[in-house]
Image 1: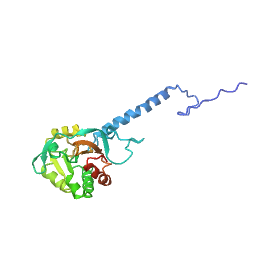
Image 2: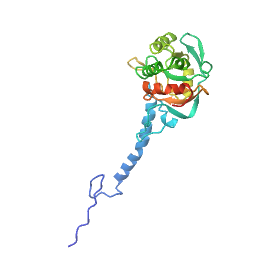
Image 3: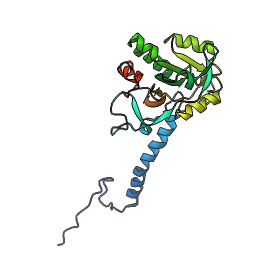
Image 4: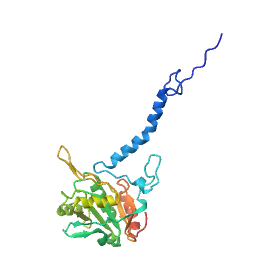
Length: 248
C-alpha cells in the first residue's frame, strides 16, 4: 500500500494545498512592496498640513533611527548651509527692515508663523524666550530672534508687536506682502502656503515649523531645529554655542 504524499502547508494561508507560485502570494508581495511608496506619499501630504512641518530632517542629513526619527534631540547641522533670505519687510514700528543688512554678523534665529496659530508658533516662541532668559545679558544682546508672519493680512504691525511682547520684548516681528514672504520661506526650504478660510469660518495658515539658525561668522544657516527638538532645555544648552557661530 502506497503512503500518501506529504502535505505542504503555506505559512501565509494555512492551506495545505497552497503552492508557492499561487497567484495570491504574488499579490501579497506586490502589496508589501507598495507600502514604502504609500508611506512616502503620506509623509509628503503631512509636510503641507495646516501649521505643518516641511520635514527637512532627512534632507539635512541627520542620523536616523530605524523608525526614521533623529536619534538624538537637538539641532540638525545642515550638510548644505542655507543663504539668509534677501528680504525687506515692515517691522512692528512700521519701519522697513532689511533682514540681510540689519542682522549682518549677528547670530540670527528665523521662524515663519502667525499670531493666530493654536500651538506650534506660541510654543516655539515661548521655548525661545525661556532659553534666552537663561543667557548672560551680553549673550542676550547679541542674539536676534526674527518672527516672520505667514498671515500678513491679519498680522498687522500692532498685532505682531502685542503678541511678541507677551513672549519677549526684544523679539522682532516682520510683516508685508505674502508673495514676498512665501518666496523668502521657499528660498530656505520652509513650506508656506496662502492662508485659506474653512467652511466653519476659521482661517488656516499652512507653514513649516522649522527654526533656522544663521551663523554670525558667514551669515548662512548651518543649523535647523524641528518643533519637537526645540525644547527650552535643548535651546538653553545650544544657544551659547550658536551665538559664537559654533554648531551644537
